[in-house]
Image 1 (tube, helix red, strand yellow):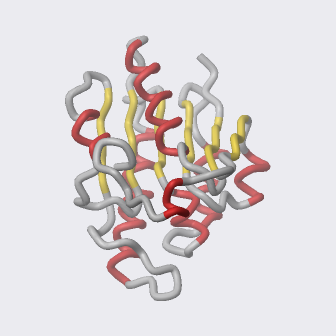
Image 2 (image 1 turned 45 degrees about the vertical axis):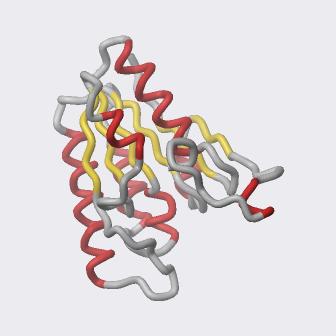
Length: 172
């Protein structure tokens, strides 16, 4: 298999869901998958509980429980993002995985938690055998230029706009 670079970005819902669907498909075919979650520390996301039950999928979570304020990024948040990027780099070059997903890395780069140039280097230098998937809003144009597949999720209508809160089991 020739591994490509994929990006799921945009302001619409479904970026992480698309990447996790790809992970499930890959694992179902016996491929080994690693998912690095940026900015999603110990918050009780349902997908992380489900993924832990699946063979061939490993997960590493980084970040704090609170959401990052892009105007006031803390040193701890930057350190967690740096650790996440190191985890992703290790997975990409370990020879242990066929698919590596960096969930919310685009946001981490846009908000300067990690250097976008380091993400570009990772995408350009990855082994040919590894499929690399980058998710999150605000994908940098230089990352888009490197990618083989880019999908932009566009919000047409969202229940948040009419006051419906996030729903456990559906939205997280």
